[in-house]
Length: 110
Image 1: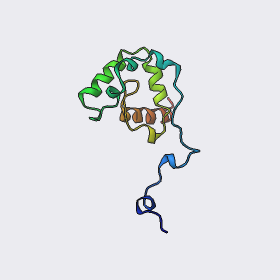
Image 2: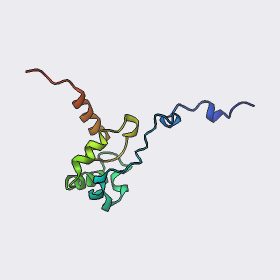
Image 3: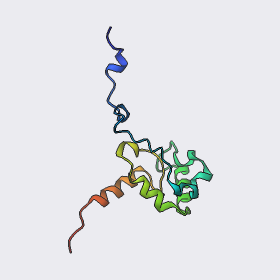
Image 4: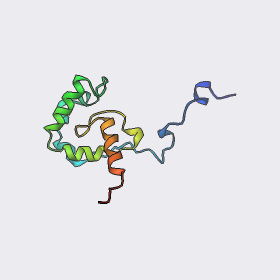
């Protein structure tokens, strides 16, 4: 019997290879001091995108957070497919991608 059509044509997903999946189940110690824990996750994962009002509120909260730098550094360790959503360390996905590109650029020799 042939496989159902919906499975046959499905694109390969990162979770299809259990050896490569990193679900980030470990919780960093600094998260206990994170301001976002008091506000709720929905503020930091708004569906409106980087320019909406809720996202701007999330970024303002991050600016006041005592562990913003740790959060941003943690977010910069995400693999590309893991980092498409959310505000971490006061940055959205595009801002984090730009930071990664900047860090990967070789230093100019003076």
